[in-house]
Length: 122
Image (cartoon, rainbow, N blue to C red; front, side):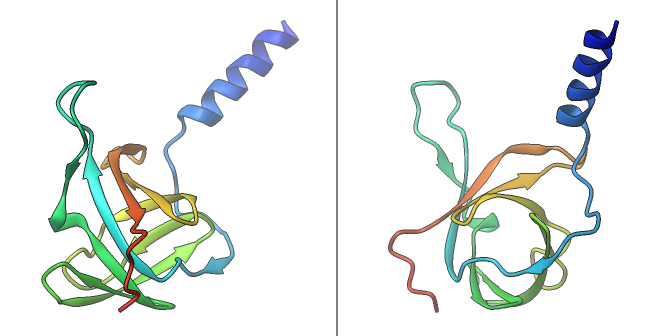
């Protein structure tokens, strides 16, 4: 019985939507983040989503692909773009150079944003 409770609790923790709960304020690594969706099948390369891509330029600011600016807030591992063209976009930081877009259901979706190796850090 105890084993079932432990397994159920672990399952609920994994499946629970990500909330912007309490966490330490932090900043994202400066540079260009290229966002991409998976290809249509396992043999195709990911498809760049230029409209979702952005560059982090300072501790709390980003620039969208069209040059317009906005702000973001990183609390714990959840980043929310709070103003500008991507306002409302939420991402979970998987690693310093890897973010995953959080879908409307509160769970990480298939779109990922990766810090470009050729980042010019605006």
